Length: 210
Image (cartoon, rainbow, N blue to C red):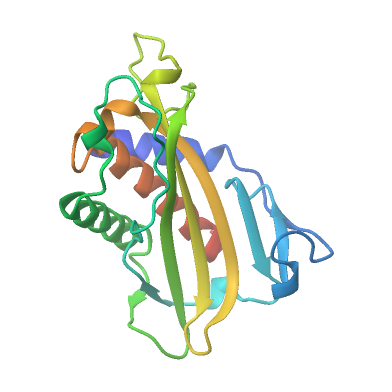
């Protein structure tokens, strides 16, 4: 059942995306670094270096998920306790394992490498967790009960892609999605696993062009 949920969620996410297009001029936050805004990427924001050749990479170096500096709200969220929001060593390790597994599945056809020529470095970071507004796409939303604002939390993340050989920044991607708030009461909830799986799958689609 778990694998079926993951497959259906990721399939729906990918089908909802249209063909990405890169703007003609480098504008926006990363223009000075030579990155161009990508439209219709499926992510909230995406910036890429022209001629980056992302689809040519066959080796990846996926860094551990960075959860060391997550912006967590002081606002109380229904269904959770303050201790649920602490990024404990156990939760950090569980999330890093979940991300490692997600990338391993999504990029299963790639060689895992530590660094060097022809290696794409993938840096991922959870930047913020905040009260969210439930929608039809909320991960873990009960189908028989309409969720309210206090039933959901918003997870924000940033992904940076580098050419490992020279540390050149190739792309910056940011996204945010909602999951059921009850997920915060568990160290490694299925909702977070589904979320990380979906991010890794879409990232692979955009990197590989497939």
